[in-house]
Structures are given as C-alpha cells and as structure tokens.
Length: 420
Image 1: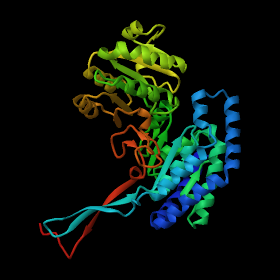
Image 2 (image 1 turned 135 degrees about the vertical axis):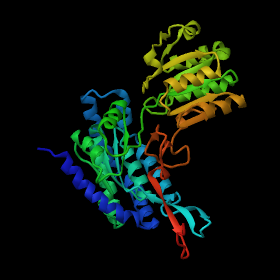
Image 3 (image 1 turned 90 degrees about the vertical axis):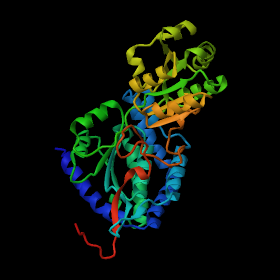
Image 4 (image 1 turned 45 degrees about the vertical axis):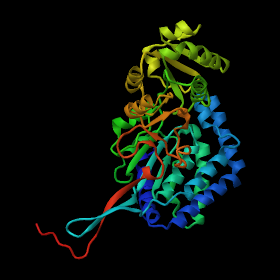
C-alpha cells in the first residue's frame, strides 16, 4: 500500500539536512550548479524532448484541454530559454547573508537585518515542466532545498529534468537532496506535503482554483499562493487609439494559456465607438470569441451576451469579455470587485488617471500603457520566477530570489548590558 506520509517524511528529512549544507555553501558553488544545469539542458536536449513527447501523447489520449497541452509542451527553443533564465539567476546578486539597515541605537548596539534562506520549500504545480527548472534554480540561488511535485501530466518530463539537476548537484559536490522531484502520480502526496510541518517550511502551489482551495482547506504548512489570473486592460478616454489596439491585441492573443493574459477588456464610453469595431476586427481575424454587455453588442455585431460568470472567468482560451464603462471610477470598481488581484493595465495619456489607477487598483502588478503579458519575472528583471503571488503577506507579484528568503535581526555590540 502506498504511504504518502512516509514518502514525504523521508524526502523531508533528506531536504532538511541538505538545506543546512546548501545555506552555508559559498555563492560560487551554488552558481556553479546553476551554470551546469544551464549547460546540461542543451546537452540533454534530445532526451528531454523525447520525455516531453511521451507526456504529450499521453495527454492527448486522456483528453487534456488545449490550454493544458499548451502549458505542457516544450517547443524547440524552450530548453534554450530555460537555460538562459538559469544563467540569468546565476548572474544575479547573492541575497544570502546580505546585511542592510544597520543602525546604532541609544544603548550603543547596532541593529541590522540579514537576508537568510527560508529552509525547505515545497512546490506543487500543474502542467508546465519549465517550473521544475525555474523552481530548482531559484531555490538553489536563495539557499533553499526544495521538494517539487509537478502534475501527473508532465511526469516523464519532470523526472528527466530532475536527473539533469541531480547530475549538476553531484558534480558540484552538493547533496542531490537539495532538489527532489517526486516521481509518483499519487494525489495523496499533495495532501501529505501540505501537512508536513516538521519537514517543509512553506508550500508554494501553482495551479487552478481547485488545487488552491483544496490546499487551503487542509494545509498546516504556510503557503504563498499563486491563484488564477483574471486580468484586465482598461482603455481610458485619454488613450491613443493605435496604442490601445496594439496593447489589447497583445494582452489577449500573444498567448492564451498564461496567468497574465487579459481576460476582460474595459472600454471608456467616450472612446468605445472608435475603438471597439477596430479591436473586434482584430479579434475576429484571430478567432477570438467576444462576450459583451448590451453597449458592446450595440457597437459590435454578433457578440454574445456576457453573464455574471464571464466577469470572473479565467478563460485561458481565445475568449474575451468586454464591458463599456462610464468612468475611471467604474473601471477601478469593476477590477477590484471581479478581478483576482493579479495583473491589470490602463491605457491612457492622462497622467492623473494613470496615477489614480496605479494607486487604487488592488493588484500585485499594475501597468500603464503596457500589455499585461509583461507581468513576468524575466520582464521585471527578476530572472525566472516561481510564479505571481496574489497574496499580500511576505511575497506579492512575481516571486523571484528575494521572495524565497526571509530576514533575521543581527546585533553588533561592544559589551552593552540591559539597564532597565
């Protein structure tokens, strides 16, 4: 009989021991592992693509959705992109041991904050095998051991990537248990990870609402949640038409199956008559289904009626919800009410409206005159990311190296004693 708790206890004990070694390892050794991983992704290209093809064939047989298959697939240039991201992480500043905010107190002591690893991080994710490399690289750079549980649909690819990481760790004389890829499809493992408070310091789940809600109901380990992306683009009355069209197109159609893809388009009434027919022509040419309110339907023929559920939908598909609004206030209210606090953008040349939107929209990433697709660790200069956190505590937005660290207070004294 499969014992999930026993498996996680075994992996957790190994990870805890490895995390202590990794945390005190010099930067050169951790960066050396990363550079070896980057090189091995190219060296093992054929093997990794074969493993991914096996996953894709199984996904097709099982009737996996188009969006999920898109996330699962490794394109010919994907491994090169992954290697570039790992190398970028290696080149980043080392956060571990960095001391900041050193200030002298009236007693004479000097108090500062030191950046430290969290310890052992459990990451639970679906479909995208690139997360295996991103997660491993970020955890290694930040001095954390990690236990990775990818989706069953990407099992062959993840296991193959795990072998690449293990080989790199061995070559740099670091414990293979610094990164452990769980090679089982058993769902009980996820529950066991979420309850393993003696072995895992934080859980980072990346997946759909069903996974997140399930973990929230059972987890005893703290979580940094990466929930759905109900992202908006608001076309303000003060928008340049050409810029608005380009951004609304890119945010929706550049890639459909990502969490920073726009799902709802909001358009100010003052620009709607000029803007909507033109963006509709672009969407129709690309096969995007449009669902709109009554004012949208008046301006665009053949648009189906948007329901209440559409305003909350993360389609991850060529479908977009469109609403005409009367003001900036109405747009902000809509986003804060229906959005998932992930990524939202305003297109406008009005500086005052820009300032209000950036300040008042309660989301992890808020953009002016730029596509929501740019809300990404690479684009923000963070290198690879674990994901984009909708949380407000500890880490918010793209979670890169610093998001996987904590702080401790360090005190420099000269014989001071407490007197009162």
